[in-house]
Image (cartoon, rainbow, N blue to C red; front, side, top):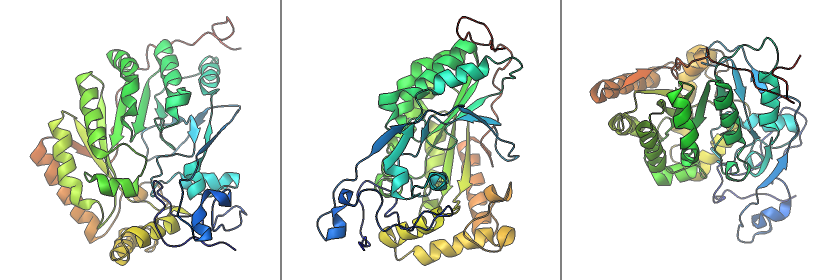
Amino acid sequence: MFHVKHSTIKGRGAQSGAVPTRFGLAEREVDGDWRDHVEVLDGPPVKLRTTVTEERPKSILTFNQSPDVPFDRSVNAYRGCEHGCVYCYARPTHAYHDLSPGLDFETKLFAKPDAPNLLRATLAKRGYQPKPIALGTNTDPYQPIERDYRITRQVLQLCLETRHPVTITTKSDRVLEDADLLADMARENLVAVAISVTSLDPVLSGRLEPRCAAPAKRLAALGQLVERGVPVHCSISPIIPAITDEFIEGIVAEVAALGVPSINWIPLRLPHEVAPLFREWLAVHYPERAGKVMSIVREMRANAFGGRDNDPNFHSRFNPKGVWADLIRARFKLACRRAGIGQGKERPRFDLDCSRFRAPEVGGQLRLF
């Protein structure tokens, strides 16, 4: 059997696919085709190939009843994410499809080119009641393959056509490619954009979220959207103890200087297979801090869920406990007060306009019956 060594896989967040899954997938030493990673044969590592498979789902609008998130419906144009953020809470969803939440999640991607037409059909249904649609709740709508597929742009065009409000969450400055649409939507009070910034160190960012835009580019994107009149928000997410918390004050100050009106923070979450992937990442990149990091993570969850790596419960999953969590809250609050920026525990519920929604035409008919 081939074994992956404890060495960095350049350009990827996960360092292997060797994590147990909950759905019958055999534990893997190497994801995908073994030839993609020559390191298993003791040769120099090569770049893992990214593949994209087109999916044809029957529906695209997903509804949720989670009481601690500011949206009740979402569209995810892609499954898997090439950004490769090692901490991504969406990684376990790949296991549902007999794929690894590790390297498979970053390299075996799925695009849904029918998403705009499926959404059009849903919006045209009699009785549909508009509320803001969240883009980017599972995987980033502006990950690199959006450059080729442009599914997110088509969804935005449909929402502008129908006057349907949208919120966007991204880590990419590629959102600026749709600045024209976003500015038009902003004038109609139909859109708000949240960009998350994890650190101000491009080297750390390159290890943690290897194919995301550099921190400076994300900040620049926030500033340009502000200039275009697009409502924006910044999220420091996640804050990783003893790894990224040193950047809290700096991020708050930078964001406030750009004219961004609000900011929040979210603690590190390690659901299911994300926990072993993150521990492996620590062992590769920060072995001297690994014990301290995981000790604080468990302390944050001690009161809520018995000191485990993760707390899946509503509300408390975003509300860590303990000395470290209290210190972060105090630092964040003080930084916001000094910078003169609004703050909150959650992303704000933007007051977007649902009143002018107009159902789209489908096949020459105003509505589907």
